[in-house]
Image (cartoon, rainbow, N blue to C red; front, side, top):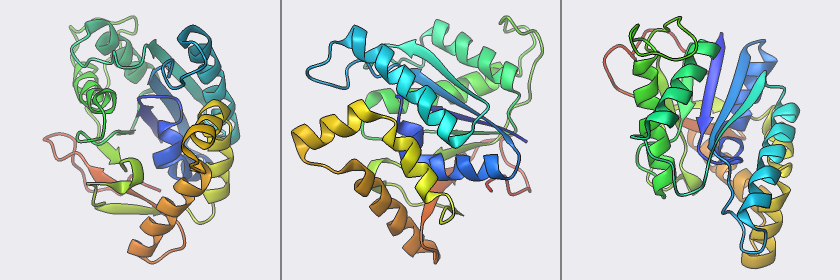
Length: 235
């Protein structure tokens, strides 16, 4: 099975679904991670041009820890993600056609910032566009509309999972992958005194309490025609 996870910023996927992605890899599936934005505004001291390059490199290092097939970055500046930007739509449609996913994981439509919500819309639109023969990208092959699963929000606020994955065996891989995002972890500690690795572990433990395991990640499925099926797609 091919799995495409689309996050907004480098580290969003690690926070919300890296344990699940690691499970897919362990089971022999091909996993692709795509970040829409480059994270260039995620620091007060490091300038955007330098930070964007650094965060893309951090995402590559994180993907290597998880063992994913490929990490892709569409390099949009932070706060500029727009689901109506046809360049972004076209680029993501091309990625969907290249990776031929059986499932796409992305942000919940209702999240705490615009970039995340626009990424969710962008995925929904590109998923459909990839099935339309006369929507042209470099790859001519069309791909079917596939199920979309929404990953947890930051701290789980406003998000009640409908399905869970047991990440007890992959929680340490998840945190090791997240630790590669050094610029963010250091910034959050230096300026907000937040131990973000502990933050993410706590959320995973809380989701585990909800479903009767030690650590878990929660998901909701996009309820839309042609994106529903009878098979369990989460690991």
